[in-house]
Image (cartoon, rainbow, N blue to C red; front, side, top):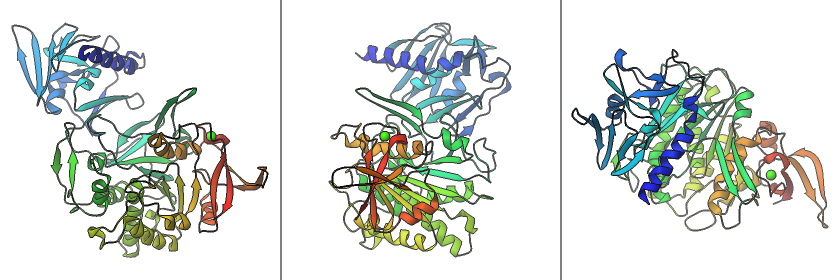
Length: 486
Ligand SMILES: [Ca+2]
């Protein structure tokens, strides 16, 4: 069984990386390698190369930078890389390898070029701690090492590729004059062990429903900077309330700590996750000349979005930041708050404190929209936070294409729906008569495409909007919303 899994894994990786066979990879074009966003440099005799249309990396140096100890057995022409309980054994010019005790077949054998051992890129992804991707636009091998802490803003380009913001370095996916949207994810329980990070790739399959698309291409075409703030290693806690506390304080129940691929935690840094978001934001947006910033938070990430916006606002009012860094609009996507008073908030609930901050931001003209796609805050430790529904432009999504029991996918569809909705006209607003007749009001309901002015008009507690058409399809294109008196 283990061998079969390994074989399937290798096969999957081979299929994923068939791009490496692409003719676009010309032998004399340089290949970049980034580990956790940091551009890697290599000695001149150990540069990444393309061999038989395949990208090859210098093995020892790559494994060492991923924390492995590498040894060479001359008699057997065998390389062994070890890290904790991981072992990767490769033989030169042999397509048979031993990975963590299981035999696997490699499509391309490790080979020696100018006395240096090279391996195909996908072999790096066979480690437990590192995932690997390819950005054909910047010709970059992107390696994510979940054994090291990595948080910050990654700017995205067409096709779900990204490059991390690093101070002082140019980024092909960011321009200081463009409208800017930054997405922040929520609780990430167990995802580090899966080497998983959220992105704008929406994949969902159920019966005849198949979704497999990148949701941000319309934003990129319209000239937006699109970023994700990753705090996933902090947000990987077994209890949602432990991850939630980190948003507000570095000295909550678990203090600040981040998770490694093997499930263990490392303490620090002594700053809240929102503080880290704020610092990344201020650095990444330093010199921003645009006039349009939107922050989008999903699930627990809604509290990150609200607290960031509040900290930016406070620092603008204190004269520390230019006013143009204040977000124009904040979107709360299937937001989560937990019940009960928190000692780190003077016994206020997180939803209660969030409402106070949102109120302050509304007086500064910030538009707030909220979308509910699941009942995830209505059960267990969740706080429905009706007060927040009353303050925002509040819409109820009805993703009936997802079975009613599948609350996880209903919860997770919200950011995909939101980003995807920018590709279409704002949804139709309608009224529904006593006999079910739907009549368009001539106005629009809320989506990412709806104007800031219309979102402001929809705020307050007079109405809410309930999806009544397009419920059986994933696309936002056919969605209608009934305007209902609250
Ligand atoms: Ca639909």
